Length: 408
Picture 1 (cartoon, helix red, strand yellow):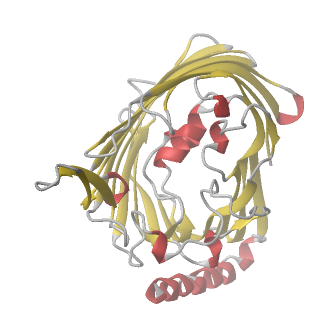
Picture 2: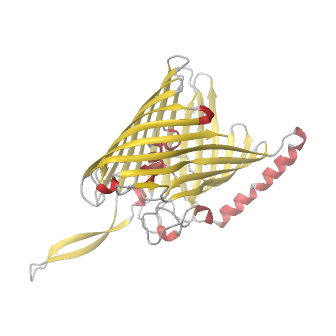
Picture 3: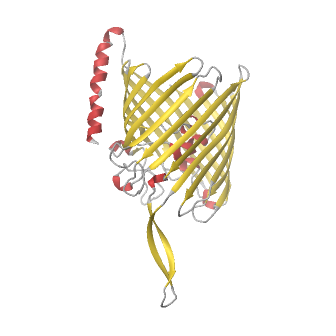
């Protein structure tokens, strides 16, 4: 990783040279920022498991900023806000009560140097979200984007990335290729901010900085993980159509036994009916082979003692083979400032041991744009989820509310 940091520092002279070169053009270094944050409330009115019932309120979103030192060189950062408890961003387990900002946190989702040697090429070095899935960034609805983020956002990536517009045509559209090589960030940048951990609370999904001992895919300490993506839009023969294709490979950490592979494909199509009405159709499929890098696990085998006939328990260590498929289908119709969204998401996890049932979620919501860049969305979610303390599926019904603000 020292070599990666040396290479990261080596990009600084490019920025200094560019700044000197453009000093005569009137360029002034400046800071640009964008905020997209929401106050979410998930009220689970009915659920098979009593612990899931109740109301949870939290902040979820991001503050992005770029320090532009030259026309083609900048330092980019993204500060993310979300609860870091297990499942908290999707309603969690309020235990029949009401929770406000429980395990609320903030952390640096990205901090990288960005250099644009020409109008079609962008180079990055630092901490970023690897180019793989698309839905976690732009799904409409209330919880659809959050659920996609928890499944296929390749965060905590430390390394190098690049994107290039390799084809542009008025008829056949514009097409970009993005690539990254990275490792799981174990530096102090992976620590959380603005939160305190209660003693012995195991519900925290992240709190301290990443370590080698925690394992997981990509946690190799080497730049032997990679992502590649293709994006296209601007087709004259199909206005409003865009696509995304991606492939991912991550090595096994200390607890894994195989390399993980991921594949994704997404389509979006917006049909404009009039100046005030339009309909957006969106779909994305993501699949991970050897999900979580086939971690080691122990299973209990029962046998009979040949002498006494008593049952004997034997522990067998094996790799947990999993193929995880996450699918989203949805539609949103807008009339002026109003919108209505219907989305279905499925999370299927086929395992060799410790099997899990397939989860399904259906969300319907209506929303409107308000003055001063505020938005308001309200909806309903029906869920069929995998129960944690019992076998099979549980059923949940939840009311959803989001008050958002987006601005510069």
